[in-house]
Image 1 (tube, one colour):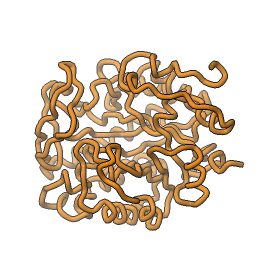
Image 2 (cartoon, rainbow, N blue to C red):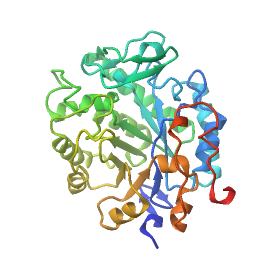
Image 3 (cartoon, rainbow, N blue to C red):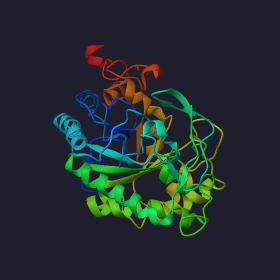
Amino acid sequence: MNILFQPLQMGNLTLPNRILMAPLTRSRAEDGHLPTSLMAEYYAQRASGGLIIAEATMIMVGNSAFWHEPGIYSDAQIEGWQKTTDAVHAAGGLIFLQIWHGGRACHPLLNDGQQPVAPSPIAITDDEVHTPEGKKPYVMPLELHDNELPGIVAGFKQAAVNAKAAGFDGVEVHGANGYLLDEFLRDGSNHRAGAYGGSIENRSRLLLEVITAVSDVWGSDRVGLRISPLNSFNSMIDSDPIGLSTWLATKLNDYNLAYLHVMRSDFAQKQHGDILTPIRAHYNGILIGNMGYTAAEATAAIEAAQIDAVAFGTSFLANPDLPERIKLGAALNQPDPATFYSQGPAGYTDYPTLSNA
């Protein structure tokens, strides 16, 4: 049997295969950041993956970075997400929710005039944000004070409680791609002094406090973490990504997480290096690789024990039956970037499966 189709034990969950669905922002939520029946259909279509990791979801009001992304902080949002978890479970799948704070990637036009927050007052400069008034430059964020950080941790903990109420099988803490927790981790965005700045240990403090709080809700073996030490998206950089990755991989052994999910490269190809090898050398738990894998490369990487599973992104977006296509060696649908963040079913729930192609 191809190793991609061998089960993977993740805590007390048994994943039926190692073809996971990566979290993908799709901006299909309704006003009020409410998950919809259309979203339930989308995720249920992809339930044959070993695990679905649902999209970045707001832990609290006032941290929207994508306009139509979902939240998990209100009763109505919990009820909306219940449609998705029910549909995925009815289709035989497992689903984690990625819980997230947008940090400096948020914008006042998306948050009733509220200024974004960050570890340091450093703005994103390499892109613009989509708003109801069109594309706009990112704004200078407010620097969070140390006494405000327990409120952030409490927000993640409440999101974890709400995700459990919505019927998810676990949660993934979003520590990647230049959002709040990643902004604290990397020294290009964290210039603060004190207990949450300076050394790698201090810069990791907020992330580890969040993991502890979320694990208190779920048990750590139902909590995953996603990181992107090389990704320059959202004006991110670190002076020593290998050192950061190695320290964090070692420290995370204390937490018995469900998995560590690593984006192995840089979207923009500005930063290069091998971070998976040192992470694998120092991390004892389940390691998930992500970014640009083909089925053949994923198979080879798992067989070589470099990783334990692969999270596929746009290929899963465009192929709801991706595991079946991989098993049969069938051609893949090509994703349509024009519909990645649009509204409605086009480019969302209308990609054909082999059975209806």
